[in-house]
Length: 184
Ligand SMILES: CC(C)(COP(=O)(O)OP(=O)(O)OC[C@H]1O[C@@H](n2cnc3c(N)ncnc32)[C@H](O)[C@@H]1OP(=O)(O)O)[C@@H](O)C(=O)NCCC(=O)NCCS
Image 1 (cartoon, rainbow, N blue to C red):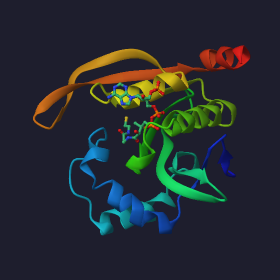
Image 2: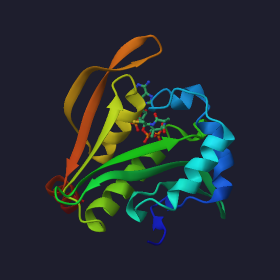
Image 3: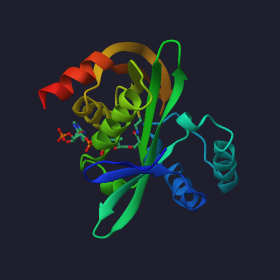
């Protein structure tokens, strides 16, 4: 697979040099608030994670998100497709923009739109879903902008910061992707 280019960002393979930044981001409580991470992560945890990527299905390896800054590309996070079910032609998406200075600039919805395009038009999926904590309003809004539709709510499915939160299920179907792109 070659690099996936959008208007302002690109998705490329993760490199060992990225691990240092990922390590800082997965230890930032503001970043991990919306993620399924709750323990401090060591550099060893992070390098083990990186070493394990080579053994994963290439379609399910995370991708680094880079934003175009002048003539250079700046790493701001990662995202990816996982839990691909070929019989059902379905999969889930995940994303972390770890560089907080780059939040709320539309990069999250652009990355998810690129992953949707990749999922439908390259991997030939029929359904692409995600899970998000209901308190993560930035994420929910970002996913809505990318075309995700709320389809369900797992009540009090996660316990974080001393309280239960609902987990929202959102998805995009191939038919919705096709009609959205015909409209444009
Ligand atoms: C969630 C995440 C991917 C979103 O990416 P992003 O680039 O910051 O988001 P976008 O700019 O695409 O969209 C954010 C939207 O939420 C809105 N928003 C932000 N904070 C908000 C708040 N407190 N209440 C309501 N809306 C809010 C923004 O205004 C924007 O909407 P708009 O474009 O209509 O104005 C990114 O912030 C991130 O990775 N956060 C940390 C990890 C995480 O939570 N990952 C998701 C796990 S499911």
